[in-house]
Length: 150
Image (tube, rainbow, N blue to C red):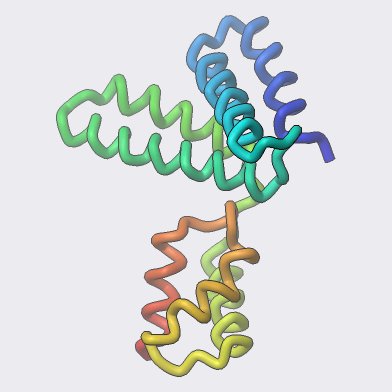
């Protein structure tokens, strides 16, 4: 499997050739975020999990920006953020379908022995490694709460 940093470099070269300024900017920001994570960890390279966490943070920022731009009537800025969001998401693993997610939640509830909504933390601890980068954290939490409440 090709490393994230190498894939970003390859796609950055393609974006430069295509003169796609927005894509160049977001790929440079992604590369910079990974470099910053390396410096923060005082190591060379970042693990796949760390890179996914960095990209998820960037995705969350884009989603918040889109929401704000749409709220204040700036559709052109929202479209730019949506494009950036799609570029970042292309680096993440395949998203889980709702059925797959519900299946993983059921398995995590059974494995953790959770019985009530107070056991949310146990279930999330079991579930997080399986869904990291493949599902939205808020959505997962809401589905787990609903499953534990029923």
